[in-house]
Amino acid sequence: MMMTDKIPHAESVLKILEPLFPEPPQIALILGSGLGDFARRLRNSQRILTEDIPGYPHSTVPGHAGAIISGELAGKRLVCFQGRIHLYEGYPVETVVFPVQVAAALGAKILILTNASGGIHRNLEPGSLMLIEDQVDLQFRPRSIVGAKHASPLPITRERIYDEGSPYSLRLMEAAESAALRKKIKLHRGVLGALTGPSYETPAEVRMWMRLGVDAACMSTAAEAAEGARLGMEVLGISCITNRAAGLNDKPLDHAEVIVVANRVKKTFAKLLTEIMRMIENGED
Image 1: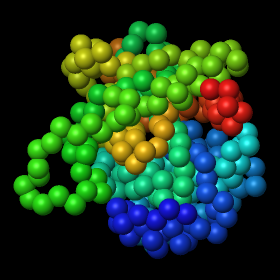
Image 2 (image 1 turned 90 degrees about the vertical axis):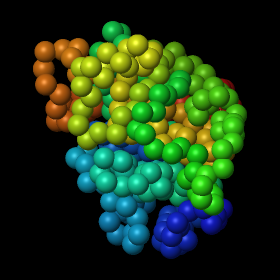
Image 3 (image 1 turned 90 degrees about the horizontal axis):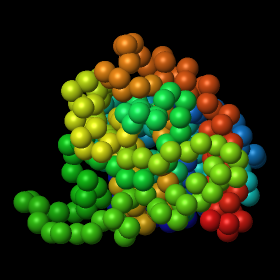
Image 4 (image 1 turned 30 degrees about the vertical axis):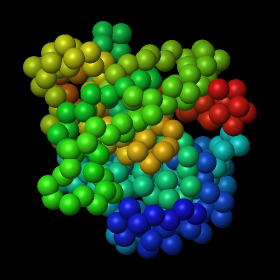
């Protein structure tokens, strides 16, 4: 198990989790709003509630169970985070990315991020799945100082944070598209936009996203993807489009609708994720 001094109070958390992982997990999976049921597919699973881990941040959002699960799927060892932490819950970014840091410390080399997002592109209707190829982060937070020990003031550098320009792995994107093709699942490619929340985006913000080339909007994922890439993990992101973004339909946005649509597509979502993991295991990507 990898230990690192870049994770605040991580040693006590890792000590509690260690019995669940006699061998290091190969894949870390963070499940977004309404997508937590996927964790039931894991074999030989063990589960611990995050509220039972001293020092671990608690998720307060409906649809985020707040559990860490070890198990196996498609021949891969997983650490699964059933629910995530959000900036809009009042947590600093260092806390939001803490699960990613824990996953890396446990030994996971691949990070799969999932979320519920609002569709902006005209082809992204509720129930669609979108492969995240890049992101526009407007959560207005520093993205390169997590875990760093800078003196004040911060030194100005032109550090290249991601090897591939984007935090998302081209290799894993190609694997995901191959998996979708094999299972005859329609998988769009698109750019994810991140706002802080908790309020939904306004119609004016959606028009701004359109001009920026953003295809779907969320309130999470961006910081996790950046931190996973910074830690050397391969990152894959998949958005479940649960609603049309503000101003693109005649209904007010509602988190209850997010959960309903996520539940409607969870079988397709699970089929795709399982096939992606199987292909990575067999080296077919």
